[in-house]
Length: 425
Ligand code: GLV
Ligand code: MN
Ligand code: MN
Image 1 (cartoon, rainbow, N blue to C red):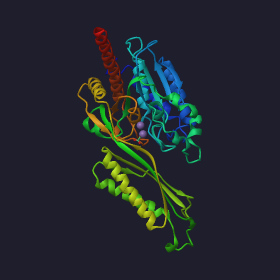
Image 2: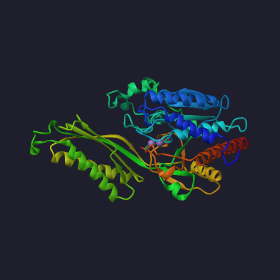
Image 3: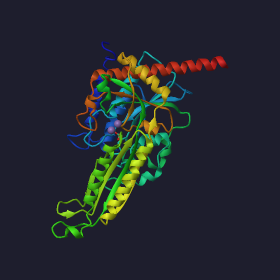
Image 4: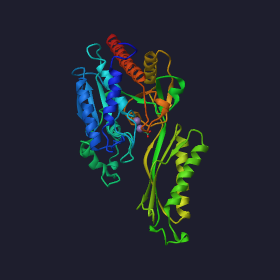
């Protein structure tokens, strides 16, 4: 088998990420939003790999691909392992997809050698990024029973509702409750994901366990003014929303630079109608605010909201402030984190750290239903949400080896619990 985990599964997992990168709505870039043909075709391909791994597959009512490793009738609660298969615009190939490929590889590692006392379900979620509806975590929300029916009326840039997009995604918006976990159906959710930050590389380590995931607030901020002719409306008579939006971008940056650990990002700016010789009628900016502490995050969002109101009033504009998502910081389950950290340490041959995640993950929503644990895989220079995203095959091999170890440790825990229960009868 050579170096740890180098039994072909790591290079296969990476080759598969490359194949999935080919499913895109933008030639030359990786862009795979919820409900697009690219996402549905990527999911079909992953479904075939799950079939080959011996999983029984299905697509649930929101469009999450689920592959079940079954251990027979009347079996114990299942372990969920997963990540997401959608992407941001112009993404790298590993964000989300690698976690699903590591999960499949772990099932392939069971072939003919080991048996688990619990079923495992791999979940390939169709919307972690929120690229199309700015919502994030649609698949895991449906699974965890945290889906808000009000989201069904959200519209994408083309006016398509989420309700319609669920159908495009092969789901059924009327029966979303069918995707929901029943009480006691699963005992944990585990996710492997690239770190998307520089700490593991700086520590010279391939893997880490995650302690907690930072809170995150996403707001669509729209300044509404009055469209006009760029060559005739005097500056003193304008109700131009663009400078107000610009002031907000700078205010968010200044605030985040001044407050330790606060992160504020304006990732999208849309002017309407959007022509160089037209004073815009409206400008919408997206605001993404994160902090490991919830009070700090919500305090910052509140201050930014006040500033937006002030800028709008001063310039005679209307303001729409629409909170699209507001997630508290999510701790991972300490006992699971210990298992992940131990398995990862064995896989890399040296103790690995437990570190917080600044990026959001489906584990945030899954934590509403079951204990969650996450493992990070080093990525080159911490680069992610960028086509330059890169991981190396040795690190992926270590992650697969760690996932093997996690399964074995959880299996041993389940068997010893069962032995104790029998003794106590
Ligand atoms: C997901 O990648 C997020 O952190 O926004
Ligand atoms: Mn991402
Ligand atoms: Mn991700």
